Amino acid sequence: MGIRENLELVREKLKIAAHRAGRDPRSVKLVAVTKTIPPAVIHEALASGVQALGENRVQELLDKQPHLPPDIEWHLIGHLQTNKVKYIIGRVTLIHSLDSWRLAAEISRRARERDLTVPVLVQVNVAGEESKFGLPPVEVPDFVAEVLSLPNIRIRGLMTIAPLVADPEEVRPVFRELKGLAEGLKTKLPGLPLDYLSMGMSNDFTVAVEEGANIIRVGSAIFGPRKTKEG
Ligand SMILES: *Cc1c(COP(=O)(O)O)cnc(C)c1O
Image 1 (tube, helix red, strand yellow):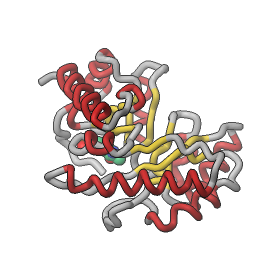
Image 2 (cartoon, protein in one colour):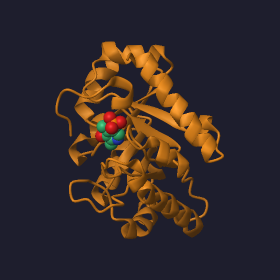
Image 3 (cartoon, protein in one colour):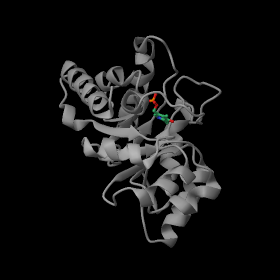
Image 4 (cartoon, helix red, strand yellow):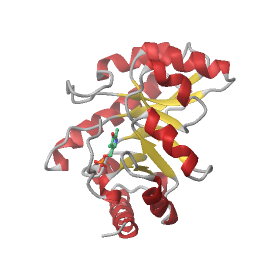
């Protein structure tokens, strides 16, 4: 199947899932994950209406940016090393992977130099997988409160990567927990614009949408299986 057909299928599934949850499908942003995908192929997705792209590596994102139209939203969805922050400030719409105080401080410092305020999501390791980045859920409320003291970074919500399982129903509790965590934060820190829940990938985005995701990050369901190794 081609990219256009794949996208139609993803959008159809998204619509059904949203309706099942009594939600407007237009309230869910589809981020097309383009890691390992060359610009020529990404253009096909753009021609089919994709507006937001997700990359998990800073260098790959910077390499591709000049080859794609300027009005695209770029999302950094992978782990961000502190020494790479300076390259990414001002070049992405949203950083999904804030996972440490050191990183938050560096983002704020570099953003301040550029007179910007950078929107981020806090990555949460809900399932406690050792192989994954992200804060344990119990640490999130204090972390969010502390980051409030930094002037040029703004937490806009939470992100998680669910464990890879055969049956996506198995990870429904993971998504439910992230949603609950966000609700708790809103109660504890009213006035904070915690609008975004970034959860759900190719194999589990319908369940994520049913549980409240409003950003989904979908790669292989659009572009096909990735051939090269990725992080
Ligand atoms: C690769 C990646 C995705 C997309 O994965 P697919 O299974 O191909 O949809 C989503 N989120 C992150 C953080 C990723 O690294």
